[in-house]
Image (cartoon, rainbow, N blue to C red; front, top):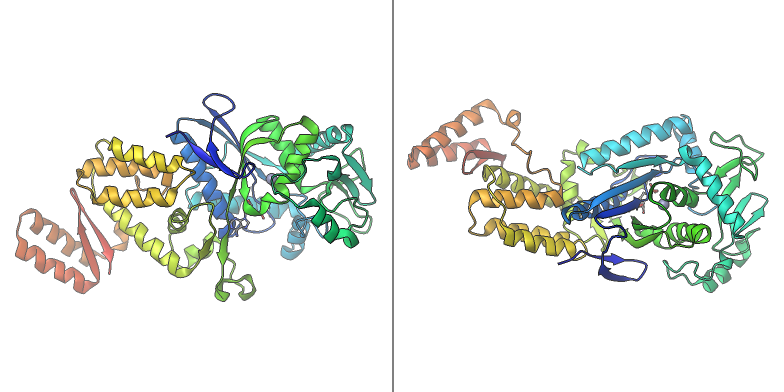
Amino acid sequence: MPLQLFDTWTRSVREFTPLKAGEVGLYTCGPTVYNYAHIGNLRTYLFEDGLVRTLKLNGYRVNHVMNITDVGHLVSDGDEGEDKMEAGSRRTGQTAWTIAALYTDAFRADLKALNINEPDVWCKATDHIAEQISFIEEIEKKGYTYRTSDGIYFDTAKQPSYGYLGRLDIAGLQAGARVDLGEKKNATDYALWKFSSPAEKRQMEWDSPWGRGFPGWHIECSAMAHKYLGEYFDIHCGGEDHITVHHPNEISQTEAAYGTRLANFWMHGYFILLNSAKMSKSSGEFLRVQLLIDKGYDPIAYRYLCLTAHYRSQLTFSWDALDAAQTALERLRNTAYGLGAPSTADQDFVGRFMAMLNDDLNFPQALALTYEMLKSDLGAGVKKATLLKFDEAFGLGLAGWVPKVEDVPADVRAVADARWAARNAKNWPEADRLRSELTALGWTMKDGKDNYALTRG
Ligand code: AMP
Ligand code: ZN
């Protein structure tokens, strides 16, 4: 079954055909590095990682570009308020440049902890000021800009197709915003370049043909996508919040400068919701990967949890759900380990698996198929090989997983070894006695083909 993906542009699942045979150009909106990423942000990057893995399993070479937003994203998400980087600098007492480096490193550590592959190209907004300025000049040349006292704005009314991606009710937005428009002509107009305020000294500012200042948030993505992927490329991704503002703005800029809607497919990951009061930011708990680690979870359990829900449905996070994911992951790891060495994958199961991924990345169904495969009467080596093939998409790291020997106390290990020997000698009464001894010590022993696995409880 050929790869089918949901395209937010058409609001439909349609067949994916690359623009250039065998290759996929992919742009994913990256983090704003004024703080750590929370696990919600990371769900979006997990969805994108699942997409990249699926594209690769379909035989495509993927050129994946991700930006780092280190300037220009304002607190309001619109064109008002302080730059998040400058606010982050005040919050931490460190320079905007220092925190950008710090949170970029922290973000990359989160990706590693979740086994998310890094993009082929990382690009920082502050490294591409010249590209953003020339992109704005291009938009200006085409007649879509106007000047206010605080910046250069995009005139969305000049573009009849503006907002199509978000199916925006332009007239309604305009009516609702009339009093707050200020110098903006239309509610949906947005800043391409903002002037530094004479009242405060910004840490991040540059000269431009329009005056000293900094780029708007949306222009960085249009300019860097253009530089690394060209005027029209295959897939652009982000979180669902980008459907109504950030992505329509990216599209309008590229449409104005180059006459394309930037990407052939627009894909969006849906949010993680936190509904327990205990986990709200107001109680001081910021749900970072590091917090999960501090609470004793394996970050891959969060990856497993995300696999249980389709990327186009919202997922409510709870500690109970994470507990269940961690238990399921541990069982799956022990099962995988117990299967011993892989032989050859079962092509029938692999075919069914690929059909599920190719059906708009149906990972929850693919996970269910995994358990069906493990319960089947295939041989251990075939099951192992098939499972490892599946894991190229899941990214749970099953191939390299071994039970942590150092976690098992020496006396427990000695009883387990004795039981393994008794079992192999077919001395069943002794094997059973030793199993009871292990249970009394608080451990469960699971027999595999070539070795055993021990779990607590
Ligand atoms: P930001 O660092 O705020 O620019 O956001 C980084 C990415 O995370 C964007 O693609 C957002 O759409 C996405 N995002 C933000 N909040 C959530 C959430 N609760 N669940 C899933 N994705 C999110
Ligand atoms: Zn973007």
